[in-house]
Length: 461
Image 1: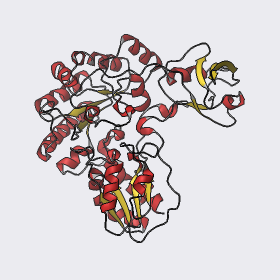
Image 2: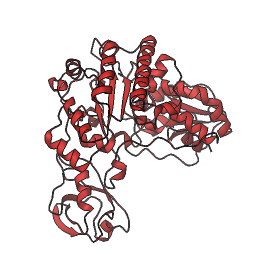
Image 3: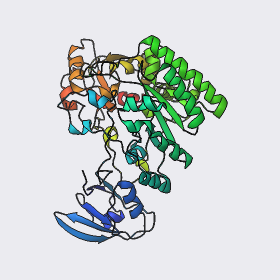
Image 4: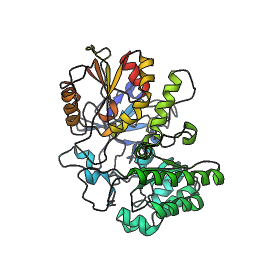
């Protein structure tokens, strides 16, 4: 819903602070303009000496702020979209939101298809609600990179998968974005028996000929929960995962020959499902879709190499431009995690890494290396996601109820439990259980840590 943004934080000594702005002020207008989103707001306040109209305790006041052009105002807002979020009018059978149980937080059921959230946070959009006006703004303001869900280039199949007739024509916007030099990353959610096999081959072929300026294309398997009601959806078998990986690898080589880059990248989940080792870091070409679950395992292994002094390099870059827009808040799964105690008291026993099934599969081969770096014995507590069920096995979808149950059942020695913070938003899990409630079920201190090798080692130190 449309609302004026609220000041969430003010940097002490900043122009906003000196001018007397306060946390809780509602920003009504900047230089006489009511901005529609944080992107427009940031452009307005980048001007010298902006004039803001704010609402404080129901009364509006005008505040002039003295500063130079491009000098940060020094505040952060509580939202990124001030008018209405462009919601999704597709009805994709594989959409995970349709597979959520009732009674969860209302925000989890919001389906957005907003190019602004794609630009800011790396959300994927289908472009079915994209317009000429949107294109004009994206091109004029160079709002890229954007992230586009493609799934199939065959118009009929794409429309069928999106359950929206506009799915057959909306890739014209993808062509227009690429023609105007906007960086776009694509995604294919791979559904066995629907857009794999010959359909996937055609999609790859057409991307290489019609959309060859796509920066990258991620191939991820659909996720199914036990609440799925779509009869034709099913999980990849190991053999199907292997066949799909063979197809991806074949077209990677075709792209490498034609474009000098691989273009197509399969998710870690496909490799784990197939029982194949993940490729070396050079195959990921800078990890353009790391946060889409593509290259995370290799990124962890590379990080261990760096910590052991056996390799150099940088960690993958965080997706989205919100980091470069000073007023933009960290939203959704980027929301601030709970703070962890600096020095929790250990019980007798090893450090226990609590994670999901895929996290456990990625960690097992490198446990001796982690133990050597930490100079501490460790073990893994693999938690099955019974709340969502199906093939839901990533650490980020672990919920409090399953964690409590696993911790109560754990009868082996434990000195400290380390939990990946990606399962949390603030201090709460997806099922709205608080971290403290889960910690009470553990026989040793439970600490939420950054889901990286360094995060694990720092929590052990």
